[in-house]
Length: 195
Image (cartoon, rainbow, N blue to C red; front, side, top):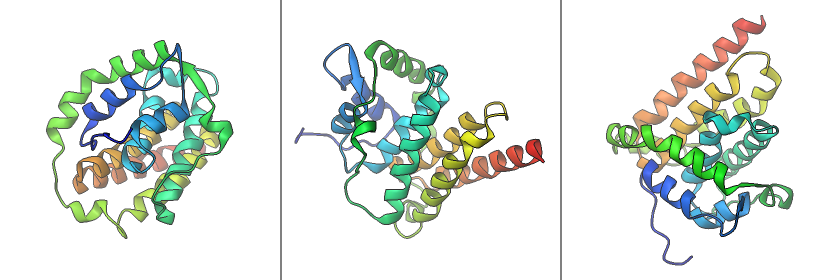
């Protein structure tokens, strides 16, 4: 898709998600192709959003979503220009109806989120600064499944990842800082619950 538009907010990402796939099912590879393998912010946002929505209740979705987030975030740390995902992940499929339901669920807060985000402290969204939140995403998401005894821990961590990703998309450093606060709160909640 050579005429792909630059994704600048959550509504743009949701529009692209609606276009992904051609049949009754949509694969991870279809989503990457639709969004673009070099669009790390939107690609990081998509699995984080799925872990926040009711779709995360689908068996295996939290593990697959967490693995995809960690691989994307780690490649941001490495400074890769295009995303690489192993074939067993790109071939993973879900029903198009489920994707459409998740997108519909996310449309409600999307307008408000896009209104409050703006280009602020944009240096935090570029290298080398962006490497720190990407590293935090990698570690938190990899650890989250181990804490599944803590209710909503994966969703809280995914919320922090979504804020990081939205910050990258909108070049909003404030959003990235808020994501850091949410991430720290999630870590504290998990630590105090298990201690």
